[in-house]
Image (cartoon, rainbow, N blue to C red; front, side, top):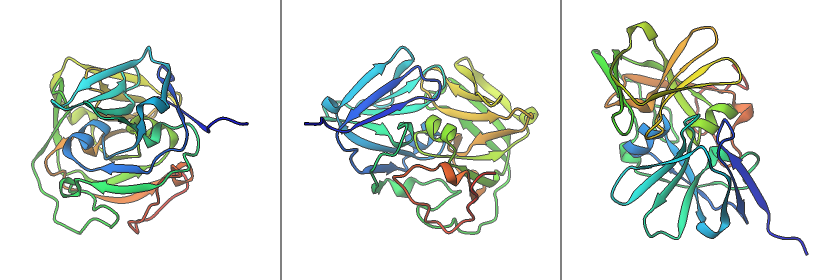
Length: 260
């Protein structure tokens, strides 16, 4: 007799790996300000029974106590958002983007949609609005990294490539920015991860928040979820949809591109 199905997953650099035995439960997508700040956009995770989750490598795993009730697990080396754990709960939330292959799951619900960012509307195109002016305030969840940059964000792009899904836990949403115009107010906990394609990802090594991406050609993008308050941006398209996760559909009606 064959045993239960096994779903394997990992962070981007491979310093955290895990197995989930049995079916992957329906995924919950959270739009709360903490999840957006931490993941760089929105966080999607499946509530897996603790007994069904086995860590097969954890030398990169770090935990951040994000509230009295919950802590968040991430890779300190690459910054991947991986787990959400509530005190006393029988389940641990495992990021949908962290799975290595198909999950066989689906989105079960959206929560805290009233806290969605101004640059998107859950399951619908964002409304047209006049972008606000003034500087943008960015920071990680713990405050160890904080910065300002000129606003507004304007055009926001959602990326569904494997790398972005692994690091954000779902998929990313970012906007182009002039790195020279970014001014750090705090950066003691800033860490950088060199990606296999020659880029660099910035994250907080203490809380795991995703912050920015510098491409090999020097172009620079800031994670929209890292901005506190209104971004003045608007999501306009989805790229690398050929690599999207199997548990969700793109239903906002915006243009989709197989690559970029």
